[in-house]
Length: 325
Image 1: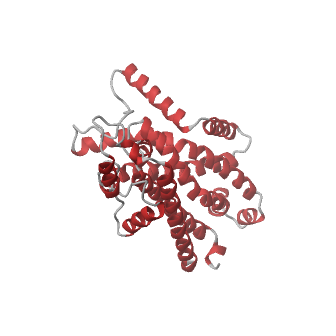
Image 2 (image 1 turned 90 degrees about the horizontal axis):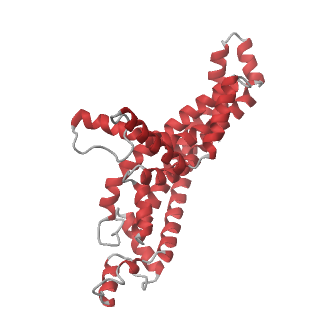
Image 3 (image 1 turned 135 degrees about the vertical axis):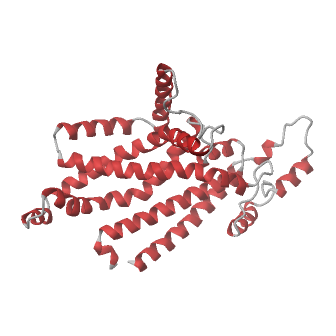
């Protein structure tokens, strides 16, 4: 099992390097940092613009491969370069990473756990009212784009708070800076409710459909009937044997779902005014900030790497055949 995981980790690291390199090349050849300095009043001399862009490794007059080598050399040493206006990409990224990780980590685990549980329940209650309610709700949620869902949640919460006459659930921002200690901790949890719901609902709906189908395939297998024939209670046989086997496809999808989750987080952070990596990506593209776009892309690739590795660990734990491959 150890050799298998190390091999998978090495492959994922190579894929991250390739993805980050391609993202930098795409950003460097399509974005135009020079536009942020041109057209100002009074006009900025061309030589001054070139010197500034050279200092930030953003000059489009420098060959893109040369700029890439400079950027990659800095990344290897932990320096992600400068933003279009001279700020430190490292400092900006340090402030925003934990904001996004809170949403992504909680949203991914919640979506996976609740979706798998609902899918298993739906399979066990096949064609009953519970199964039909879960199925209809899942398809409705999957049909709604995440930015529409987030907007609907924000509007509904605003109307709810106004009707109650006090703020029950926060619908904008990360926390109230005027609070401190335990009060601020609770306030942060309150602000986390709506973004987490908007991110995890889609995953819950999708996982529930996958898990239901996989569970139905497993329920009628011989090994499940044999386990119950040997005296195991139905619930024990379903959880210990059927659910464990049916979890493998969902665990395999875990890494891909994380990438989709990051896309949803980009909209969610903008709608709920969270200053995370997703919102920074949108702002960086609008500002033609090549180094910031590359840094966010590398962060997303690393997140998918971690999710992929966790997926491999989970599959190896569930499927004994993987441990000897």
